[in-house]
Structure formats: structure tokens, C-alpha cells
Amino acid sequence: MKAYISKRAARAAERIHEGWRQRADHPNTFSVELLAAIESLETSGGFGTSYPTARHPQLRRVLLPKSRCHVYFEVDEGKQVINILHVWDGRRERGPSL
Image (cartoon, rainbow, N blue to C red; front, side):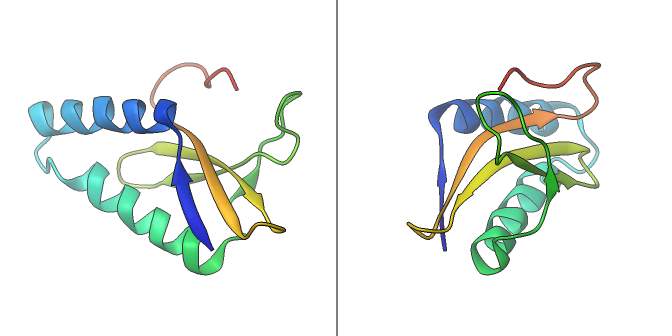
């Protein structure tokens, strides 16, 4: 499967990456985890936790354990694609609007 990252997810990932780059002891932690998660999604596809919403009943998310961020995605089996809709810093007190 091939993963596609939405503009919203790309902007969020860039913001989180910048925060890690500027303030973390290990500034590449988030980026390394995110790339590894995307690679795993492309090879495995079906993992993650179900996180359905009204607009996205098939939504799933995967936790990046070291950075504590979540990657929100949907799998389109027919087209063999994974659509990454958002990347969210899990340390925030609420979840994203999806």
C-alpha cells in the first residue's frame, strides 16, 4: 500500500517537528518515529486503534510512543492506499477535530 499525507497532516507534522527541533534533548525523535510509522503502515496497513468519527467512520490512529503523538489515518483497501489525515501531539488535553 501507498501512504498519502494530507496538507493538514503535513502542516501539523512540520509544526511538531519544529517544536521538537527547538526544545527537545533528542530533536529527531518525532521525525524518526513518524517516518517509521508511515513505513510500517505501508507494509502492514491494518494496524492501529479504531477511532471512528461521524465524518470518518473507518478512522484509525497509531501512537508514536516516544513523542506521544498520534497519526490519524484511513485505509482504502479497494485503491490500496492509506490516507493520513492528521498528526496530533498527544500531550494536548483534547483530540483533534476530524
